[in-house]
Length: 359
Image (cartoon, rainbow, N blue to C red; front, side, top):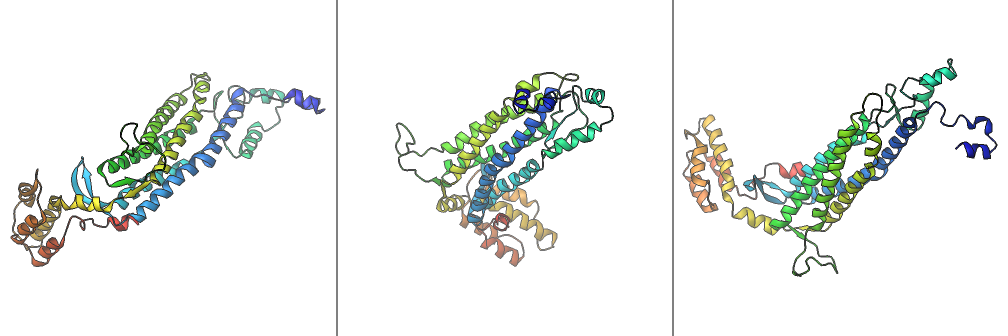
């Protein structure tokens, strides 16, 4: 820099290059600018693409009744749209936190005291000059530091990006499972090979690749957060080595986002499979029946004792068909209106306000 200034005939100010600075005065601003631009101009737009696709799928499949599987077992039905909307909702919340993250830098000399600055010019308001310079770069100014900017903003950011990655990993495993159950069919890609020996297969590789990349990214981001939060006394160099991997961590996350985007664009909902699955699991209506009985008891229209045990005996551990449940309901001592509501209920209609939630 000094040589360049001299070549321009600016020898008089050449010695002001790196004036009173420590390396971290340069590096903290450089990292903050680099990471800020990477997040705002590259990573967040990639995340937004996935969120937008999830919102689209949630609306498209808002009314697609499906069997829930709590603990992997048949449970109260939902809709595919609502389940996808859950992921969009979770991601949007963390996205807002990431978008609001601080990006801080220091500019206060060897140990954060402006000592050399004051020795050179005791009359200058060095903290104000430094703040105006850093804020002029579009960054936040960290007034109180050691030799290094404390990196807490980085720890906060990487923890939040890792959190978003965990949600995305959950999305990948759930979609993979829905594909395995036949809920989603994968749209064939011309010329693609699913298996070297089984030509019928279309493997859910986009979601598997996303999983792996998110795991690598998450491990690196966790390591960054764990290391950068600590600096021995006024300075050590562990942060310098660690920060060289920021781009690698975001790179794996971007690969995952790209795979998720491509994977979500190549699946088609098999509504017939969802309905068939519901039709062989009428026992999930046991929740509705025992809850209605409780309400009827409270209202004085029934004297049935322990309806949970009654339904448990009927349904636990084995399948119960629609006709079996209808016969059971017909014999219940409950009000006629409640009985008719239960008789009209099917697994495909027992979805509460799932459709409205999805929309």
